[in-house]
Length: 299
Image (cartoon, rainbow, N blue to C red; front, side, top):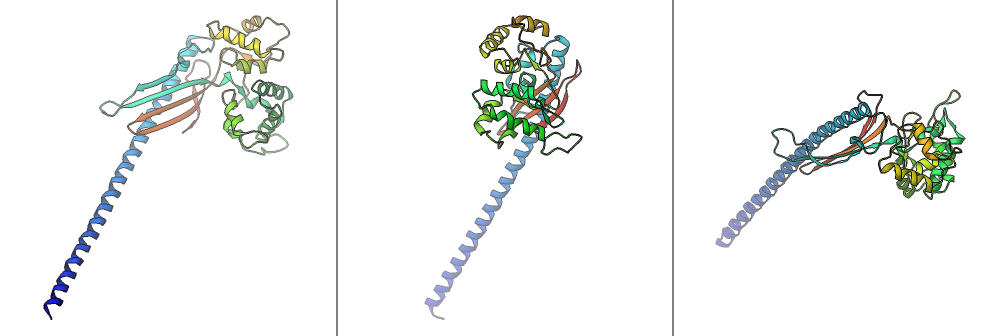
């Protein structure tokens, strides 16, 4: 073997060794990166699990507040403790140096129009359809949309003659895709509509002027706004008779549509723990002065 051949062989050996070292370094780096990613994933899952547990504590807080409100007052109004939102409340577990912040609010679902009222046993109720048409008109949405919504609600109900033709509505968001209903309409309607498991009245102490006007034929929207403005300045309705008297119009009859207290509430909460943010919504049913029952929970 010549000296040149020997030199070339040594050079190839060196290059081979360098390639082996480079490959090993790349493999080691990949393993470390995967381990780091796995560690971050596990930490994130741990934080999300802990945040969900803390959110459940926030839900228990809501139940206590609503129970206290029922014992304290015979009416449900927006000046009560339950109606005050919470923002950035520190709820870090004992001994945990990390900061956990809770934000949440309780909404009175009986301050909205309940789509469940539109049909009974799969049959659309004409008077309720008129209420929805008036509400849509006050929101500058074509009244024809009301018929599509009412039929959808009726189809979700079973009767003696047939089974339900469609799944039940879980919320206002399920109206997307109905004939004439655009995503923009759903966003407009969300603050004014709800879907509850049973037929309900509208709470005059928490309902918007649009919802009040729609439920009371003969009450113009302008008058409803004046009445709601007076109410929101602290002149709450103490009873249905009080509400009727303050209408000042004997031709406007509340009938069985209006009340002054509520049994159904939606809780929306969010916990921030380090980089994890977890949200939750829940529907609560309050019966008398007992602690409200959790009907459903959604992430």
